[in-house]
Length: 265
Image 1 (cartoon, rainbow, N blue to C red):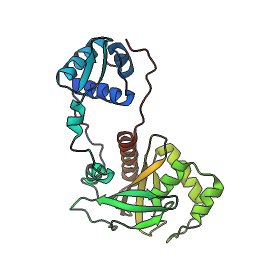
Image 2 (image 1 turned 90 degrees about the vertical axis):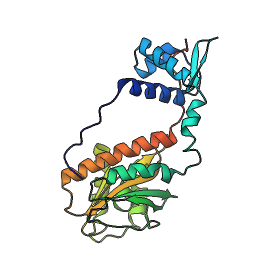
Image 3 (image 1 turned 90 degrees about the horizontal axis):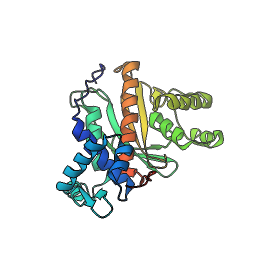
């Protein structure tokens, strides 16, 4: 991966506002007035009204003239029809490919199976990279490696529960339980876990979780590379990207309906 910070794409304000409004209506699940939508989304009221009028004309939003409220329309389903019935792995795959672009790391999607196992569901890599490889279907203890640290932290386990999981782990470069527990505190600060050659000698990895609406980890996202291929700063940036991607995916897949605090008008 190019370790310089990527230049962000220039956003189109009207599109950003329209998407913000649609996401708010999707999370709300109930009709609401334009003023309440404007307040909740931070979009100027007149701008919000004009965007809503356009969305109504395109069938994405329905307007009720009786109580002057808006709700999502069937046009949204038309846009989403290609995703209906798709499994989560298929939906997450493009994000894996994005993270792997121009990177020496193998980007992994781990599925959490029960309390004590994770399974490699998918992975992506840059074709020109000299890289580590892991087979799809590989199983590991749920606390193993960087992804295991991220999962353990997300579950908020007691020391006793953490110790039971730690006892199942095998290391090529052994660390103590206190060192393992201390590494979980770093996740609180940075949002991702790291394994610097402890599980497998010469292999460096960072990882974050994909949480559901309650914060429970549902998947793990990891980047695995030959130690030394990426600097500490580069690994940190990758870890932060994984954390941001995990939150974004979790919100898209497991978002719970929001509650409107204002009164529709």
